[in-house]
Length: 113
Image (cartoon, rainbow, N blue to C red):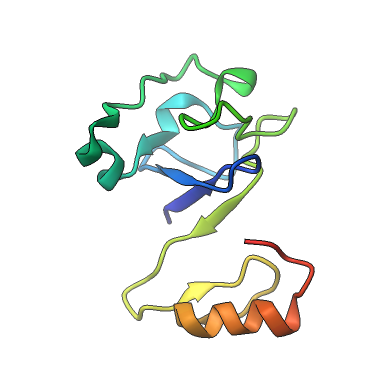
């Protein structure tokens, strides 16, 4: 499964995980790539490699940290599957994007997007 990575500082979703990503080990630069529309906008490639860990994994937009002190991603959101539904980041529910917005608003008001 791939995830969109949301920066906890600026809330931008500039990166996504790739085929190298696993929840079983701390994140490193080889697990991320720049989202396609940012590449098309001229941001270039995301130059992090397997040796880029912990403090070096920062948001390309604001330089905010993307991983916690143990090396795991702070905010990740599952990408839509074939059925068009996405996972709720707060519970086990799956919703269409508009339904998720309403679900978060009413069931998890403390969650900020």
